Structure formats: C-alpha cells, structure tokens
Length: 301
Image (cartoon, rainbow, N blue to C red; front, side, top):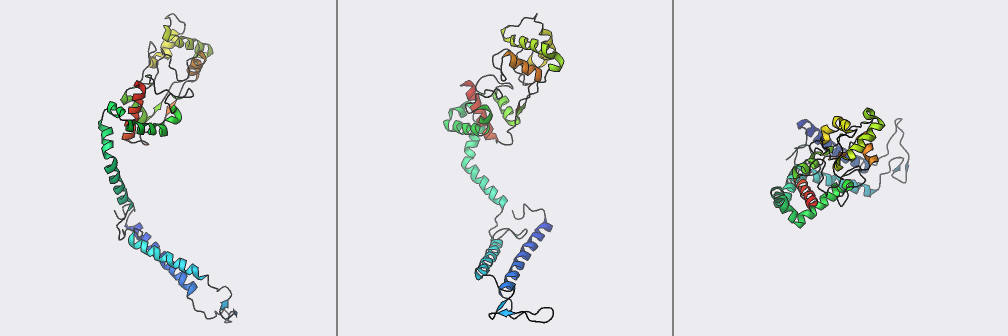
C-alpha cells in the first residue's frame, strides 16, 4: 500500500524533494568542513589571516575526526533506509513495507490465532460461555480493568453511588439484551429535584409515603396525591418502577442511595443524575458478550 497514508502527489513530491535536499545539504556541510582547501583565507582588504603551527587558523580548526565518521555513517544508514523502506514520497522501498500492510498482516495473524474463539463467543449461548472456566476468567479480567473501579471487584457496588451487579435488581433491566445495551451505550439517570415544588414539608411527607410503599402505604396517606402527580409517571402507580425509563422500584429494600428517611428525602429534594459512561467504543463485541455472560452468571449464581 505505497503512499496510502499520504494526501496526494503534490505532498509526496515535496517530501521526496525535502528528504533528498536535506541529505545533499548534510553531505555538502560535511565536505566543506573536512575537505576544504588548507590555503590561508584573505579578508575583504586582501590581507591574509594569521596562521599558527602551519595550518591552524582562527575559526577554521576542523571538528574531531570521529564526528566525520559519525555523520558519514548516518548518511549511509539514511540512504540504505530510504532504499529499503518508504521515505521518498510515494516510493514504497525495495521491501514494499507499509504501515497499512503491516496492520493487515497483524490482523490476519490475530484472526488465525483467536478467530475460532471469537466466533465461539459470538455464536454460543450464554450458558455455554458461563460453563467455560477459561472464558469466564477472561471475562473477569475484562471486568476488573473496566468495571471494578466503580462497581467493586466483587461487583457488589460501593459508596452508595454504584449499583450492585450481583442481585436480580437492575434499574435499567436485567435481561442479557438490557445489560448489553447498558454496557454499549451507557446510562444517564434523570430524576429532577422536587424541593422547589413541594417545599421541605412536602418533601418529608412524600419521603415517608414512598418509604411505606413496600409495606402497603395507605391510600388515605396525605402524600398519596403528591405521589400520583409527581412520581407515578416514572415509578408507576404502585411504585413498581419502570426499567425502560430507568426508574427503580420503590417497593423493595434495594436502594442505591439508601432507603433511610433522610436518604429518600435527599433524593426527592435534589434529584439524582447518576451516569454510567458508554463502553461501546472501548470494548469490542467479543469483550461485551463475555461481560454479559459474566454479569448474568453473577445475577443467577
């Protein structure tokens, strides 16, 4: 793929001219320093410059000879390199090497070594993948590098900010398809704060009501109307939640930010805007599928 990464003939031509010109200039510099005539130079008025010890003139002492060999060796290596590898514009070199060609070779080698395993991961059922200890060990390493910083190495969440991935409660759905979508696209929570609307007393009253939903909150509760007006659209009339919207159930004891009355008040008053970044561009299809197999195994294990 000679010149595949270059914009066009104009720039490839300029690269060739500059490269050759630089080599010629360096060669001329070496020649002028080491092989110039030894005759005394005259200044502008025709007077000869003073000479000491036969050939020593002011400002004309040549550099050490090892400099010459170093520069000469560099010139030889540069010329040989330009003959063998790309460097003179679109000239591909005698070895026909290119970055694009090397990349294709590497991809072919990778496919030859891992293609079978990748096809197995893509085509096998999650149960088959989960039964393969070596694949699950690979999945655990992927998890440790990309997920453990937030969800913990045991996947049980931490700091009341990152959810537990080992239980059956998934805010955005715990099906393999939903988990894969969460990994690929990320998730952005969007619960608004209701303090400006409800006031502090209204927030506390609504927090008390939502805390009682799992215990059969009475329909006569004074905050029932507020819940129906502000919360039911996302969390459901009975508080069962809606994974499509990322609205968690309010009837169980699983609460990411805590289920104490104070924690619930904080959520209602200020809202919650948790963010999980997308990994679709960081991880390939094989890695994502292995993660899904690992996480569904954690959930059902």
